[in-house]
Length: 165
Length: 208
Image 1: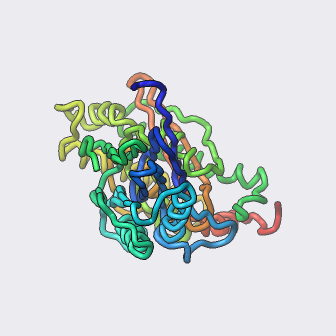
Image 2 (image 1 turned 45 degrees about the vertical axis):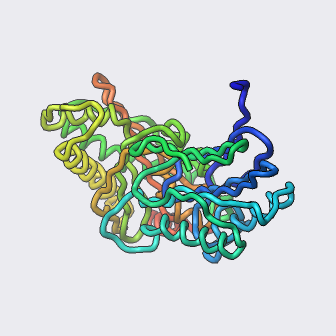
Protein backbone atom coordinates (compact mmCIF):
# COMPACT_ATOMS: atom_id res chain seq x y z
CA UNK A 1 0.00 0.00 0.00
CA UNK A 2 2.76 2.39 0.88
CA UNK A 3 4.59 2.07 -2.36
CA UNK A 4 6.05 5.21 -3.69
CA UNK A 5 2.95 7.30 -3.83
CA UNK A 6 2.71 9.75 -6.63
CA UNK A 7 2.48 13.35 -5.49
CA UNK A 8 1.72 16.16 -7.86
CA UNK A 9 2.85 19.50 -6.53
CA UNK A 10 0.99 22.62 -7.52
CA UNK A 11 2.82 25.88 -6.93
CA UNK A 12 1.50 29.34 -6.26
CA UNK A 13 -0.56 30.56 -9.22
CA UNK A 14 -0.47 27.13 -10.85
CA UNK A 15 -2.98 24.39 -11.55
CA UNK A 16 -2.82 20.71 -12.39
CA UNK A 17 -4.90 17.56 -12.77
CA UNK A 18 -4.67 14.07 -11.33
CA UNK A 19 -6.04 10.72 -12.47
CA UNK A 20 -6.68 7.37 -10.79
CA UNK A 21 -4.30 7.49 -7.83
CA UNK A 22 -1.86 9.58 -5.91
CA UNK A 23 -1.99 12.90 -4.18
CA UNK A 24 -2.22 16.42 -5.49
CA UNK A 25 -0.83 19.00 -3.14
CA UNK A 26 -0.25 22.69 -2.70
CA UNK A 27 1.64 24.25 0.20
CA UNK A 28 1.52 27.51 2.05
CA UNK A 29 -1.91 28.86 1.21
CA UNK A 30 -2.37 32.20 2.91
CA UNK A 31 -4.77 34.60 1.31
CA UNK A 32 -4.58 32.34 -1.73
CA UNK A 33 -7.29 29.74 -2.21
CA UNK A 34 -6.86 26.10 -3.15
CA UNK A 35 -9.86 24.87 -5.16
CA UNK A 36 -10.31 21.21 -6.01
CA UNK A 37 -12.69 19.45 -8.37
CA UNK A 38 -13.30 15.72 -8.17
CA UNK A 39 -15.31 13.07 -9.90
CA UNK A 40 -15.51 10.05 -7.56
CA UNK A 41 -16.63 7.65 -10.29
CA UNK A 42 -13.77 8.05 -12.76
CA UNK A 43 -11.36 9.27 -10.06
CA UNK A 44 -10.31 12.39 -11.85
CA UNK A 45 -9.46 15.53 -9.96
CA UNK A 46 -7.85 18.93 -10.29
CA UNK A 47 -6.37 21.56 -8.04
CA UNK A 48 -5.79 25.25 -8.61
CA UNK A 49 -3.80 27.57 -6.32
CA UNK A 50 -5.58 30.85 -6.92
CA UNK A 51 -3.91 34.08 -5.89
CA UNK A 52 -6.20 36.90 -6.94
CA UNK A 53 -9.98 37.16 -7.39
CA UNK A 54 -10.30 38.63 -10.85
CA UNK A 55 -8.29 38.77 -14.06
CA UNK A 56 -9.70 42.23 -14.79
CA UNK A 57 -6.82 43.75 -12.91
CA UNK A 58 -4.21 41.84 -14.90
CA UNK A 59 -1.83 44.29 -16.48
CA UNK A 60 0.79 43.86 -19.15
CA UNK A 61 2.18 40.59 -20.37
CA UNK A 62 0.75 37.15 -20.75
CA UNK A 63 -2.26 36.24 -18.66
CA UNK A 64 -1.58 33.44 -16.24
CA UNK A 65 -4.98 31.75 -16.12
CA UNK A 66 -4.09 29.77 -12.99
CA UNK A 67 -3.57 32.90 -10.95
CA UNK A 68 -7.07 34.34 -11.02
CA UNK A 69 -10.20 32.76 -9.59
CA UNK A 70 -12.36 33.75 -12.55
CA UNK A 71 -10.06 32.06 -15.06
CA UNK A 72 -8.61 29.19 -13.01
CA UNK A 73 -11.91 27.63 -11.92
CA UNK A 74 -13.33 27.33 -15.48
CA UNK A 75 -9.94 26.01 -16.65
CA UNK A 76 -9.75 23.14 -14.16
CA UNK A 77 -13.40 22.42 -14.94
CA UNK A 78 -12.62 22.02 -18.64
CA UNK A 79 -9.53 19.96 -17.86
CA UNK A 80 -11.35 17.39 -15.72
CA UNK A 81 -14.17 17.15 -18.25
CA UNK A 82 -11.57 16.49 -20.95
CA UNK A 83 -10.24 13.64 -18.81
CA UNK A 84 -13.64 12.01 -18.67
CA UNK A 85 -15.22 13.52 -15.59
CA UNK A 86 -18.95 14.12 -15.77
CA UNK A 87 -20.34 17.57 -14.98
CA UNK A 88 -23.12 15.87 -13.03
CA UNK A 89 -20.80 14.03 -10.70
CA UNK A 90 -18.28 16.80 -10.13
CA UNK A 91 -17.90 18.15 -6.62
CA UNK A 92 -15.72 20.96 -5.36
CA UNK A 93 -13.85 21.71 -2.15
CA UNK A 94 -11.78 24.66 -1.19
CA UNK A 95 -9.46 25.89 1.52
CA UNK A 96 -7.42 29.00 2.23
CA UNK A 97 -8.47 32.60 1.81
CA UNK A 98 -7.27 33.70 5.20
CA UNK A 99 -6.26 37.15 6.31
CA UNK A 100 -2.69 36.66 7.41
CA UNK A 101 -2.25 40.08 8.87
CA UNK A 102 -5.03 42.02 10.44
CA UNK A 103 -4.36 45.59 11.18
CA UNK A 104 -6.18 48.78 10.58
CA UNK A 105 -5.30 49.81 7.10
CA UNK A 106 -6.70 50.64 3.78
CA UNK A 107 -6.78 48.97 0.45
CA UNK A 108 -8.38 45.89 -0.93
CA UNK A 109 -5.20 43.91 -0.41
CA UNK A 110 -6.28 43.41 3.18
CA UNK A 111 -9.45 41.66 2.15
CA UNK A 112 -7.92 39.64 -0.65
CA UNK A 113 -8.52 36.29 1.08
CA UNK A 114 -12.29 36.62 1.50
CA UNK A 115 -12.54 38.09 -2.00
CA UNK A 116 -10.72 35.11 -3.46
CA UNK A 117 -13.17 32.80 -1.70
CA UNK A 118 -16.18 34.75 -2.94
CA UNK A 119 -14.93 34.79 -6.48
CA UNK A 120 -14.24 31.02 -6.52
CA UNK A 121 -17.72 30.33 -5.15
CA UNK A 122 -19.32 32.50 -7.77
CA UNK A 123 -17.51 30.66 -10.56
CA UNK A 124 -18.41 27.24 -9.14
CA UNK A 125 -22.02 28.32 -8.95
CA UNK A 126 -21.95 29.46 -12.56
CA UNK A 127 -20.58 26.08 -13.59
CA UNK A 128 -23.13 24.28 -11.45
CA UNK A 129 -20.55 22.43 -9.36
CA UNK A 130 -21.66 21.90 -5.75
CA UNK A 131 -19.22 22.97 -3.04
CA UNK A 132 -19.27 20.10 -0.56
CA UNK A 133 -16.45 21.10 1.76
CA UNK A 134 -14.81 24.33 2.76
CA UNK A 135 -12.20 25.44 5.25
CA UNK A 136 -11.62 29.11 4.58
CA UNK A 137 -10.95 32.30 6.45
CA UNK A 138 -9.08 32.72 9.69
CA UNK A 139 -5.62 34.18 9.98
CA UNK A 140 -3.38 31.21 9.37
CA UNK A 141 -1.71 29.38 6.53
CA UNK A 142 -2.73 25.98 5.19
CA UNK A 143 -1.27 23.15 3.18
CA UNK A 144 -3.75 20.98 1.36
CA UNK A 145 -3.61 17.61 -0.29
CA UNK A 146 -6.29 15.68 -2.15
CA UNK A 147 -6.25 11.91 -2.36
CA UNK A 148 -7.27 10.94 -5.87
CA UNK A 149 -8.47 7.53 -4.70
CA UNK A 150 -11.06 8.89 -2.28
CA UNK A 151 -11.39 12.59 -3.00
CA UNK A 152 -10.64 13.38 0.62
CA UNK A 153 -9.01 16.74 1.12
CA UNK A 154 -6.43 16.82 3.91
CA UNK A 155 -5.71 20.21 5.43
CA UNK A 156 -2.77 21.01 7.64
CA UNK A 157 -2.08 24.24 9.48
CA UNK A 158 0.38 25.36 12.10
CA UNK A 159 -2.25 26.62 14.50
CA UNK A 160 -5.15 24.30 13.92
CA UNK A 161 -3.43 21.02 13.22
CA UNK A 162 -4.92 18.51 10.79
CA UNK A 163 -8.33 18.39 9.29
CA UNK A 164 -10.15 16.35 6.65
CA UNK A 165 -12.82 17.40 4.24
CA UNK B 1 8.03 40.67 -16.75
CA UNK B 2 8.56 43.37 -19.31
CA UNK B 3 9.11 46.03 -16.73
CA UNK B 4 12.29 44.39 -15.53
CA UNK B 5 13.58 42.80 -18.68
CA UNK B 6 15.82 45.68 -19.47
CA UNK B 7 17.19 46.10 -16.01
CA UNK B 8 20.82 46.76 -16.45
CA UNK B 9 23.36 45.41 -14.06
CA UNK B 10 23.97 48.82 -12.58
CA UNK B 11 20.32 49.24 -11.68
CA UNK B 12 20.54 45.98 -9.78
CA UNK B 13 23.63 47.36 -8.08
CA UNK B 14 21.67 50.40 -7.00
CA UNK B 15 19.00 48.16 -5.50
CA UNK B 16 21.70 46.16 -3.77
CA UNK B 17 23.04 49.36 -2.31
CA UNK B 18 19.55 50.13 -1.07
CA UNK B 19 19.47 46.77 0.69
CA UNK B 20 22.91 47.46 2.08
CA UNK B 21 22.08 50.86 3.47
CA UNK B 22 18.72 49.87 4.86
CA UNK B 23 19.76 46.60 6.42
CA UNK B 24 23.09 48.09 7.50
CA UNK B 25 21.33 50.68 9.57
CA UNK B 26 18.87 48.16 10.91
CA UNK B 27 21.75 45.88 11.88
CA UNK B 28 23.41 48.75 13.69
CA UNK B 29 20.18 49.41 15.55
CA UNK B 30 19.94 45.76 16.46
CA UNK B 31 23.53 45.73 17.55
CA UNK B 32 22.83 48.68 19.86
CA UNK B 33 19.76 46.97 21.26
CA UNK B 34 21.63 43.80 22.04
CA UNK B 35 24.98 45.35 22.76
CA UNK B 36 26.53 42.74 20.48
CA UNK B 37 28.24 42.94 17.11
CA UNK B 38 26.02 41.96 14.20
CA UNK B 39 27.33 40.73 10.88
CA UNK B 40 25.59 41.22 7.61
CA UNK B 41 25.77 39.33 4.36
CA UNK B 42 26.00 41.08 1.00
CA UNK B 43 22.42 41.76 -0.08
CA UNK B 44 20.94 39.68 -2.84
CA UNK B 45 18.78 41.40 -5.39
CA UNK B 46 16.90 39.13 -7.70
CA UNK B 47 13.87 38.84 -9.81
CA UNK B 48 12.33 35.63 -8.55
CA UNK B 49 9.28 33.56 -9.37
CA UNK B 50 6.81 33.50 -6.48
CA UNK B 51 7.66 29.93 -5.60
CA UNK B 52 11.34 30.68 -5.26
CA UNK B 53 10.78 33.50 -2.81
CA UNK B 54 9.49 31.14 -0.15
CA UNK B 55 12.44 28.88 -0.92
CA UNK B 56 14.69 31.67 0.27
CA UNK B 57 13.60 31.08 3.84
CA UNK B 58 13.47 27.32 3.62
CA UNK B 59 10.37 26.42 1.63
CA UNK B 60 6.69 27.29 1.57
CA UNK B 61 5.91 25.13 4.59
CA UNK B 62 8.79 26.25 6.76
CA UNK B 63 7.47 27.85 9.92
CA UNK B 64 8.80 31.34 10.40
CA UNK B 65 8.13 34.35 12.53
CA UNK B 66 7.50 37.33 10.33
CA UNK B 67 7.02 40.96 11.16
CA UNK B 68 5.33 42.63 8.26
CA UNK B 69 5.23 46.31 7.45
CA UNK B 70 3.52 47.99 4.62
CA UNK B 71 5.72 50.82 3.43
CA UNK B 72 3.81 53.97 2.72
CA UNK B 73 4.89 57.19 1.03
CA UNK B 74 6.56 57.99 -2.27
CA UNK B 75 7.87 54.48 -2.91
CA UNK B 76 5.38 52.03 -1.42
CA UNK B 77 6.21 48.39 -0.91
CA UNK B 78 6.27 45.54 1.55
CA UNK B 79 8.93 44.97 4.16
CA UNK B 80 9.34 41.70 6.02
CA UNK B 81 11.64 40.91 8.88
CA UNK B 82 11.86 37.15 9.08
CA UNK B 83 13.48 34.82 11.54
CA UNK B 84 12.94 31.37 12.89
CA UNK B 85 10.81 31.11 16.05
CA UNK B 86 13.87 29.72 17.86
CA UNK B 87 15.98 32.69 16.80
CA UNK B 88 13.22 35.02 17.98
CA UNK B 89 13.31 33.38 21.41
CA UNK B 90 17.06 33.88 21.56
CA UNK B 91 16.63 37.47 20.55
CA UNK B 92 14.03 38.01 23.26
CA UNK B 93 16.29 36.53 25.90
CA UNK B 94 18.98 39.01 25.06
CA UNK B 95 16.66 41.91 24.57
CA UNK B 96 15.58 43.43 27.87
CA UNK B 97 16.48 40.14 29.55
CA UNK B 98 13.05 38.70 29.07
CA UNK B 99 12.80 35.30 30.63
CA UNK B 100 11.56 32.89 28.07
CA UNK B 101 9.02 30.72 29.80
CA UNK B 102 7.90 28.56 26.99
CA UNK B 103 10.00 27.45 24.05
CA UNK B 104 7.00 26.96 21.80
CA UNK B 105 4.44 29.60 22.66
CA UNK B 106 4.92 33.34 22.63
CA UNK B 107 3.47 35.27 25.55
CA UNK B 108 1.78 38.60 25.09
CA UNK B 109 4.84 40.31 26.54
CA UNK B 110 7.14 38.54 24.11
CA UNK B 111 4.83 39.29 21.23
CA UNK B 112 4.82 42.94 22.14
CA UNK B 113 8.60 43.05 22.59
CA UNK B 114 9.02 41.38 19.22
CA UNK B 115 6.80 44.03 17.60
CA UNK B 116 8.90 46.69 19.19
CA UNK B 117 12.12 45.16 17.94
CA UNK B 118 10.54 45.00 14.50
CA UNK B 119 9.48 48.60 14.77
CA UNK B 120 12.95 49.77 15.61
CA UNK B 121 14.54 47.74 12.83
CA UNK B 122 12.02 48.72 10.17
CA UNK B 123 12.23 52.32 11.26
CA UNK B 124 15.99 52.41 10.86
CA UNK B 125 15.86 50.46 7.60
CA UNK B 126 13.39 52.86 6.05
CA UNK B 127 14.65 56.11 7.49
CA UNK B 128 18.10 55.46 6.08
CA UNK B 129 16.55 54.74 2.70
CA UNK B 130 14.48 57.87 2.94
CA UNK B 131 17.59 59.91 3.71
CA UNK B 132 19.46 58.32 0.84
CA UNK B 133 16.75 58.83 -1.75
CA UNK B 134 14.98 61.91 -0.31
CA UNK B 135 11.73 60.00 -0.76
CA UNK B 136 9.24 59.74 2.02
CA UNK B 137 8.87 56.19 3.29
CA UNK B 138 7.26 55.18 6.52
CA UNK B 139 6.23 51.83 7.93
CA UNK B 140 2.73 51.01 9.11
CA UNK B 141 2.32 49.49 12.54
CA UNK B 142 3.92 46.07 12.60
CA UNK B 143 1.87 42.93 12.04
CA UNK B 144 3.27 39.70 13.46
CA UNK B 145 2.63 36.15 12.45
CA UNK B 146 4.13 32.76 13.03
CA UNK B 147 3.11 30.57 10.16
CA UNK B 148 4.13 28.88 6.94
CA UNK B 149 6.55 31.02 4.96
CA UNK B 150 4.56 30.59 1.76
CA UNK B 151 1.36 31.82 3.35
CA UNK B 152 3.07 34.84 4.86
CA UNK B 153 5.19 35.89 1.92
CA UNK B 154 2.43 35.51 -0.65
CA UNK B 155 0.85 38.45 1.09
CA UNK B 156 3.74 40.64 0.05
CA UNK B 157 3.45 39.54 -3.56
CA UNK B 158 -0.10 40.61 -4.30
CA UNK B 159 0.92 43.85 -5.94
CA UNK B 160 3.23 41.92 -8.22
CA UNK B 161 0.56 39.32 -8.80
CA UNK B 162 -1.32 41.86 -10.85
CA UNK B 163 1.52 42.14 -13.31
CA UNK B 164 3.41 38.91 -13.56
CA UNK B 165 4.61 35.82 -11.83
CA UNK B 166 7.86 37.21 -10.52
CA UNK B 167 8.77 39.74 -7.89
CA UNK B 168 11.88 41.71 -7.19
CA UNK B 169 13.30 40.93 -3.82
CA UNK B 170 16.01 42.73 -1.89
CA UNK B 171 17.18 40.13 0.59
CA UNK B 172 19.66 40.87 3.38
CA UNK B 173 20.71 38.35 6.00
CA UNK B 174 22.25 39.31 9.30
CA UNK B 175 23.88 37.08 11.84
CA UNK B 176 24.58 37.58 15.49
CA UNK B 177 27.64 35.40 15.95
CA UNK B 178 27.56 33.75 19.33
CA UNK B 179 23.86 33.35 19.84
CA UNK B 180 23.40 32.33 16.25
CA UNK B 181 20.50 34.61 15.73
CA UNK B 182 19.95 34.84 12.03
CA UNK B 183 17.34 36.94 10.37
CA UNK B 184 16.37 38.23 6.97
CA UNK B 185 15.03 41.47 5.66
CA UNK B 186 12.91 41.24 2.56
CA UNK B 187 12.04 44.45 0.82
CA UNK B 188 9.59 44.00 -2.02
CA UNK B 189 8.94 47.42 -3.53
CA UNK B 190 5.69 47.80 -5.45
CA UNK B 191 6.27 47.63 -9.20
CA UNK B 192 5.50 51.35 -9.51
CA UNK B 193 8.08 52.29 -6.93
CA UNK B 194 11.12 51.49 -9.02
CA UNK B 195 10.75 54.51 -11.24
CA UNK B 196 10.43 56.68 -8.16
CA UNK B 197 13.55 55.23 -6.60
CA UNK B 198 15.66 55.50 -9.74
CA UNK B 199 14.48 59.01 -10.53
CA UNK B 200 15.20 60.11 -6.99
CA UNK B 201 18.72 58.78 -7.32
CA UNK B 202 19.24 60.50 -10.65
CA UNK B 203 19.30 57.41 -12.83
CA UNK B 204 18.31 58.43 -16.36
CA UNK B 205 15.13 56.69 -17.43
CA UNK B 206 16.23 55.16 -20.69
CA UNK B 207 19.79 54.46 -19.75
CA UNK B 208 20.01 50.69 -19.85
